[in-house]
Image 1 (cartoon, helix red, strand yellow):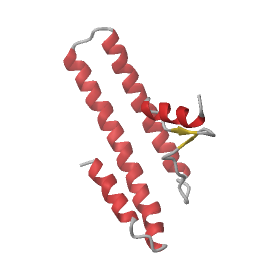
Image 2 (spheres, rainbow, N blue to C red):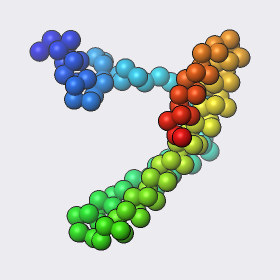
Image 3 (cartoon, helix red, strand yellow):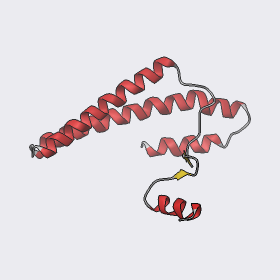
Image 4 (cartoon, rainbow, N blue to C red):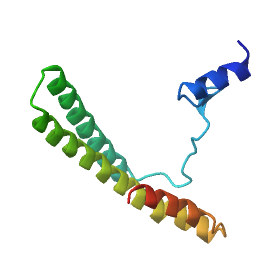
Length: 118
């Protein structure tokens, strides 16, 4: 299979990895996240993953639907809070830096991101 065919197949399967192992949508922040923010987000992600694993176990154990839904709502809330934290960091660092550098198009990107959470 050619590289082009592999890339096309990956896109169809929902994987957007490019040759060399890089995601086509992956970029890196110019300003690194603080150690405190990294630690907080990692802790919250681990907690949300634990909640989802618990929900998975509940489904496998054929637990009552209402109880499963309550736990799913808690996990969804946890993930939403993580997204809010990352979005705030994005606005305070990436967006501010780009606007200061004269790139006002970043405001459109920020608005699209905010709309995803409304």
